[in-house]
Length: 173
Image 1 (cartoon, one colour):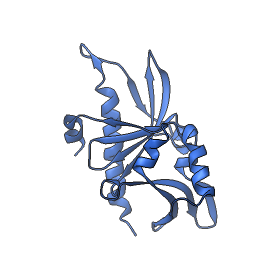
Image 2 (cartoon, one colour):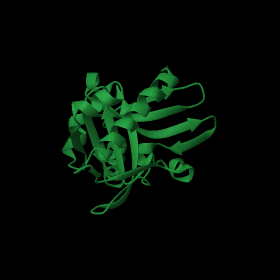
Image 3 (cartoon, rainbow, N blue to C red):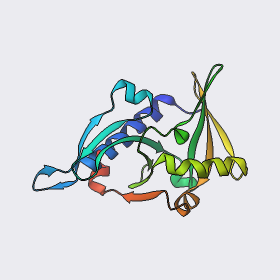
Image 4 (tube, rainbow, N blue to C red):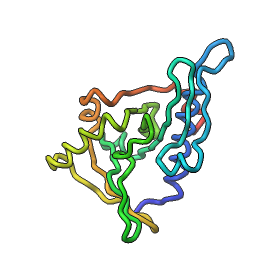
């Protein structure tokens, strides 16, 4: 069982890292992106941020942080959440956010993808029983995650990577 409060604090750092990444884009002291926290109804659908830009339009972003991916070379794609007798789909299968960012903590590497584009791969992996599924327990709920090697995610050509500056990384540490 992991420490929920510790993981939540690290997750908040991941959100701040992605926010800082977007807010640092620009030139001549002008921001290229405007970032705001998702509203309550947007958060319930899985978004952490709403980002707007004159060139790209607007996007909803969700951020996940993984404290074991650097050591294991795998990511945990949450496919189900169970609260008592209630089961819901996990964030890897939700398609409300336009992009899901996945921070490989504590590195400067961010993976990102459009969830809608990755879902068909996840379904194939589940049907083919290609990867193991693990349960992560918490005092109030548990989640089931598909454990996928980072190299296999990148091989889909749906998942991309960003290496943020070490200055941004130092800001959230």
